Amino acid sequence: MADQFPELSDELSAFINEQKVFFVATAAPDGRINLSPKGQDSLRVLNSHEILWMNLTGSGNETAAHLSESNRMTMMWCAFEGPPRILRVYGTAQVFHPRDARWAEFSKQISSTVGTRQYFLVSIDLVQTSCGYAVPFMDHVEDRQVLTKWAENKGEGGISEYWQKKNQLSLDGKPTGIFGS
Picture (cartoon, rainbow, N blue to C red):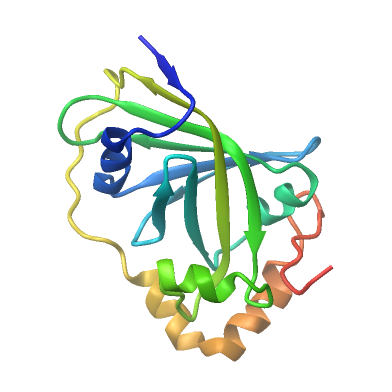
C-alpha cells in the first residue's frame, strides 16, 4: 500500500499545497521525540527536493533543539477531505534565525510576522505515500487566529522576553540556539 519516491512530484506538491494542517517530527539522539501539528500559511514547496517552513513562536522550541544535535526531520500530511492519502517526507533540515543571512531570502518566500521564530529548510531524501484509509473526514472551518493575535499583542519586545523564558531550552534541557550559540 505504500509507494516511495526520491523526490516530490508535481502531483504530490499540489497535494501538500491543498492541505490545511501538517505534522513535523524530530528527535535528538536521546531524550523525547517531538511531534507537532502545524498550520496557517507557513509552508512552501520550493522544488522537488526542498520545503521551506516558517516556525511560529510556541510554548516550546523542541525542533530547533533537536536539529542542533541531529538534523533529521519527518513531515506528514493527511487527506482529511477528498480521496484518502498520507504523505510523509523524510529528510534533513537546517534552522535559520533572524540573525542569519538567509532570513531575508526566506521572508520573501513566506512573510515573517511578529511571532516568526525560525525558518526551517528541509532537504528531502525520501517521499512515501500510503493509503490513509483510516484517516477520518474532517471539515476545515478556518485557521485559528489566536497565536497571531497573541504575538501581535506581545509585540517584538514581549516575544523576545517570552523566548528568554520559554524557548531557550527543550523539554530535555537541550539548547535551542534562539539567541545564538
